[in-house]
Image (tube, rainbow, N blue to C red; front, top):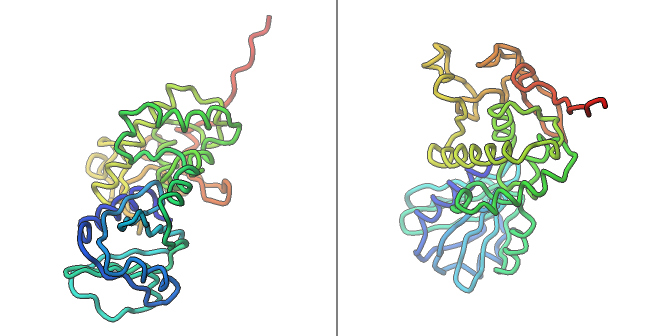
Length: 283
């Protein structure tokens, strides 16, 4: 499933291609045809993302709400739109570009009130402009984490705690901060969370800029270590994500994987040692 940086990049690309322009909106597949007709021939004002949710704004406070899910693809191309191929749920076409949506979990035309209801269910988004300038953003997530006995590895993937974080950023953030993924959220210290939040904001913004996820520090790049670059369809240099059985770039221990809440979890047993609560001193 695409992570938040992908949706923010997509929102920026859609705004660049169609923002402020009159567009044709259709549904070659037919499932979105009635809603598409309501905004066809209108000005696409902008596209924006919150976490893994995309909202494409039209006049009258109407929004096409898209959630790509596991299999959704939203591809933008230049030129005149050709005859649609495959199950195109939504097509947006302008004089110079077109965009086709396939396989999305959600594609609905909603009101501003309905959009607000979606946002109210989501945690703070590290990619929002005020993620670092407004302390309330990180505190919203901290309030949920600090009260929960659930593993921090699961809490980071809960979209009601944090919006936009997926399996890659979850695994890499925990590694970079040497935190056991199974550590209960309520055992973290506030200073640890603040450091994690700042790091996550910076990593995800870089992901938007580069359109890929790179999480290794300069001293652990292929060039610095004299190792071969990572070859993976997700791209980017990482510490533990999808590196099961391979040596850790830092300590050399084999990266491990296990299932947590239905998703594969990756960690280094050497760098992320199991959390042991401090026992009370004997009087």
